[in-house]
Structures are given as C-alpha cells and as structure tokens.
Image (cartoon, rainbow, N blue to C red; front, top):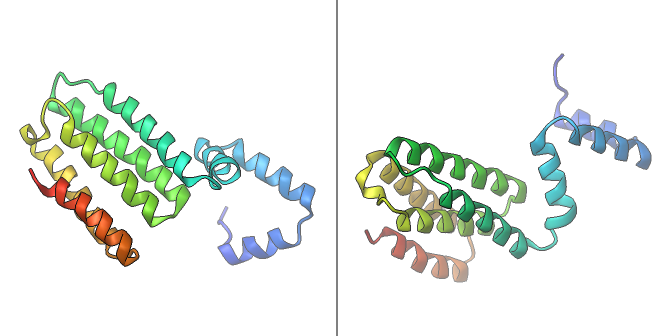
Amino acid sequence: MKAATIKELKNELGIKSHSELLTLCLRLSNFKKENKELLTYLLFEASDETAFIESVKIDAKQQFELINTSSYYYIKKSVRKILRMIKKFVRYSKKTETEVELLIYFCNELKQMTPRMQGSVALHNIYKRQVDAISKKVSTLHEDLQYDYQLEIEELELD
C-alpha cells in the first residue's frame, strides 16, 4: 500500500464530517504511542508551552538520575536515549524557543553529570554537537531572544 500525499489527505479530511474525523483521530491514536503523545500535546499541552517545557525537563531529569554510571558505554546509550526523547517532544511543539530551551537544559544536565563527560570522547562530541545546534537555532530567533540565549550558550561553551 502506497501512502497518500499530504495534499490528498488534506482534501479527503476536508470532506469528512465531525464525527468521522473524531473516529479517525481515535483510531490513529490506537496504533502508535507517538500518535497518542502528539494528540495529547495538541489537545492538552499546546496552550501552555511553559508547562510543557517544564514537564519535559522533569522527565529528562528523572532519566539522567537513572543512568547506569558503571561504564561510559551505558552512559552514552542513556544520554542518546534522553536526547531522542527531547527531540521527539521538540517535534511535537515545532517552536524554536522550546527546542533551544530544552537543548540548553540537556547540555547543562550533561555538563553537571558525574562521571564527567570529558572522560568520554563520544559524550563530549554529543555535547559539542548540541551546543552547535543550539547556536544555529538561536541565530534564527528575534534579536532580544538571541542576546538572552547567547549568554547561556557562552556558559555552555566554557569547559
């Protein structure tokens, strides 16, 4: 089965009734956890972006506390898992400010983690890539926000 294009889906959804759309959304949410999470974000959390950011930060903090620190291999796997989770929630939001805020939080947590990330080249590279990504995203924001975030980026770059 070949998937329809976005335009075709949009046209087809435009002719569906309210009850049919409701049924389609509920059916879609049954198939994948990400679909259900996205629907939850759109319905309950999109109106309060600050609370959404805080809830993601709390989840990330809990994940950082659960990291198995017996070897850098396990630390690296856990850090990548946390980063994937953060990126997934950023995709739901589609707001650059949210992405920058969450990535800065991720980098700060990684920087404060023990054992230190400087002991692993892979962890240090993950950190540097995220700092570079933050810098690129910040350059697209409004000038006032750029200045505020630039101060935080400078703190991240000080190793």
